[in-house]
Length: 455
Ligand SMILES: *Cc1c(COP(=O)(O)O)cnc(C)c1O
Image (cartoon, rainbow, N blue to C red; front, top):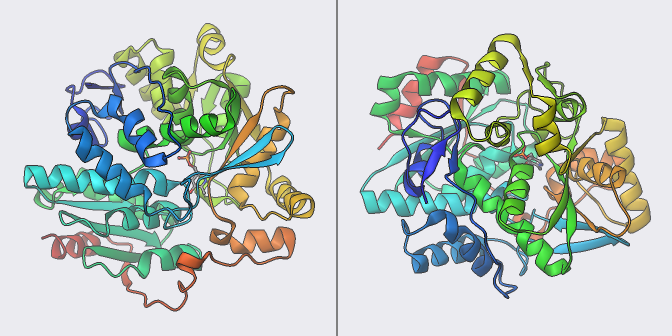
C-alpha cells in the first residue's frame, strides 16, 4: 500500500515512512492510494480484529506476525476484556466505551499502538526521534503513555501552566520513565502550540534533534480508529449510525473510512460544542474560522478541523492541486466554500451535524444520571445530544464515549452533584510523585531544554 499527499506534490511513501513523517512535505496529509475492502474476522478478540483490519493499510512493510504482536501488546493495556465494549442505553441507543485505556480517553486506542509502531520501525532502522508536542490535556497524556516504554523515542510535552485539569496534569507528570519530559509553560495552549511550530520551522534545530510528532493528523492514528467501528457493528450484529463528538474531524473521518472499507454504517453524526466550525459547514457549505471559546468539553475546543482535509481531497476527486489551492484561499480569506454538487455527493448522503451549548451538555449529563444512573463525560454528552437529534426508528445509533467521566470530574459534578471516582488502575494518581519543569514562554529556553534531553 502506497500513501499520497492530499496536496499532490509530496513524494509517495510506504506505510512506515508515512508513520514517521506525520505531515507531508507539501503541507498535506497522507492518505492511502485507495480504500481497501475488508471483511472482518469472526472473532471477538479486539487485538486480533485490529491486526486483521489494519493489515490492509500496513501491507508487507511490517511482518504480519510482528504487527499482530504489537496489536496484542497495545490493547492488553486496556482494562476491559472487550477493549471497547458496546453498552445499550435505550431501545436503539448504544454507547461505545473507548475510555478503558491507561489515560481514560479514546486517544489511547491509537496512541498505545503508535508508540509501539514507532519503536519497532526506529529499532529496525537504528534511528532515534524526539517527539515534541503541545497539549491542552488529553493528547499529551495519551502520547506519553504510548511511548513511555519505547527505547528509541524521547518525548517533550508542553502544556499551559495552570490551565489543564489536575487529573490531566498528573497523568502526564507522574509517569516515571526517563524518556518522558513534561514542561509547564507560563502561557496559554496557543503559546505552547506556537512554540512547537517554531521548533519544527527551525530546520537546523529540527534536524539536529530529530524532531517528530504524533499529532492527530498522523495517518496511523486515523487508521487505528477505524477498527472500533467494525468491532461495534460486529457486536451489534446490524447496520447502524454513529454519533461522534469531534473537533479535529479525526474520529468521525475514521468512521467514514470504515464505511468505504465496507462497514455497514448508515449515517455519521458530528457532535460539536460551541466551537462549531464543522456544524456551520454542514449547514452552509462554507467553512469559516472563528475565535475559540472555552467550553466544558475542552478537547474539542479547536478553531480548524485539520483532518477535514482528507475528506476535502475526496470531495475534489483526489485532485491534490485543487485541494491545495482551496486550502490556500482558506488561509488567506478565512473561508472555504464547496460546490453544491460536491456537497450533495459527499455530505448529504452520510453526514449530519449538531451543536451543543454547555447548558445542553449539562442537561444531557443530568438526564443520563437521573434515567440510567450513568455518569458520562461532557464530550460523550455532546455526542449523545447529537445522536438524539438524528435518531431514526429502525436504525440503531451508537455514540462514541470518548472519555471516562473521572477525567472531567468538575463538569460531571456540576451536572449531577456526584463526583466520579477514578477507576482502580489509576486510583493512586493523586499519591504519585510529579516531575515538572517550568519554563517561560520563550523559544530559546524551550529549545535549550529540548536539546539538552536529546540523546
Ligand atoms: C480528542 C478528543 C475528542 C475529539 O477528537 P477528534 O480527534 O477531534 O475527533 C473528543 N473527546 C475527547 C475526550 C478527546 O480527548
